[in-house]
Length: 476
Figure 1 (cartoon, one colour):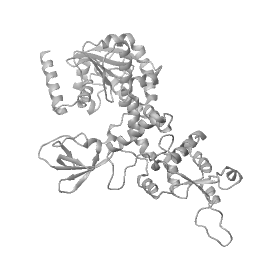
Figure 2 (cartoon, rainbow, N blue to C red; figure 1 turned 120 degrees about the horizontal axis):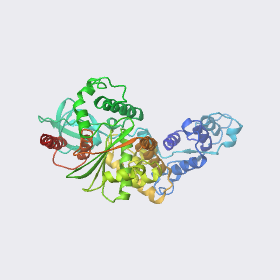
Figure 3 (tube, rainbow, N blue to C red; figure 1 turned 135 degrees about the vertical axis):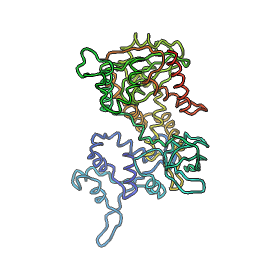
Figure 4 (cartoon, rainbow, N blue to C red; figure 1 turned 135 degrees about the horizontal axis):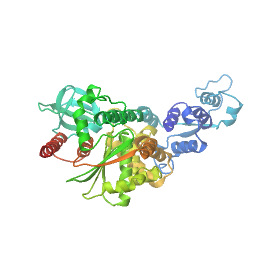
């Protein structure tokens, strides 16, 4: 964002680097900006850093001496040294500002670079919007590119109050036609995929604890006063059959407990854990556990997560139960957390994807001219190429460091992950072997199936699994 701000200033009358540093530091977010970081930003914009200097489009800033002061009776439209100093200094003119002035200003002299910057200025890097248009008809609206990219020609989805068949995608426009086939597929936006917060996850654990106390009251429980106490809302009463089935197959965890279920199927050995900490924390926990378990017993482990827990799937015969019972303290340890995460997760690939947004805001990757916008895949390819160049030839690039920091702090929520591990260290471990996946495990199973390539729809596969479970229940 700082790079974009400096380029925006350079599109106008320019800025004095020494005085602008004082102005930037007056902003709370940049109050601790050091001189080395500031110098790197200026060098990156002026010379293209260590590896982009051969490309003129990345050498944006040019030094320009201040115009001489106008003589008596003369007019000068260019801002003078004093005017630049007064406009850029938060304290105005004065002896200290006079002493700090650099004697030159940075400007963008190429009109094409300034025009492209003005067209692509902004800090919101949401997924690209695709126009939905009826073949030889009107525009119906817009959906995110991530949703359209999962559709194949002939797929039907519900949008704008009608059933639509996807025809083709061309130049960020999805061509559709009306269909009489029914489909429950609706556009999904990235905002609907946000993980639950730490406050919401705490309340969720309390609700599960309340349900556990209602269905299986203990002598020390004081909140239960009847067979349905605790299930005091229409939603919980509607879920009562599933909650009782979960309690029969395994159990419902109390507030101070961590439930871990293990079972076997034709796919292999399964481990289901339910910390109720949110999707991002579970993503980190799942890969962390997979890495730490694999150090004791080699194997290929697949991870799937949701807001309630995570699943580890290994080949048949993998001793999940024995390994968890023997190494539970190591699995829940927060020592060497960052080092283990780097080994467990393809951190480079996560940083590469995060770098796309950083490259857009900083001006390294441009969306294009109006009417000629690049697709999300084109932007990702361009950003990934720059990421690889920086990683190989300029590993100390501050944009790479920002991408890595954002992955650890925002995507993996490292601070929440560490807090969750410390909470789980104080929890009672409930290791429950089950004959088959229960109600809590079924959404994790569906999450994994949804990421597989199949000529069956997800609903068809889930219906088949449900029929198999009901057949087994009938035999039992």
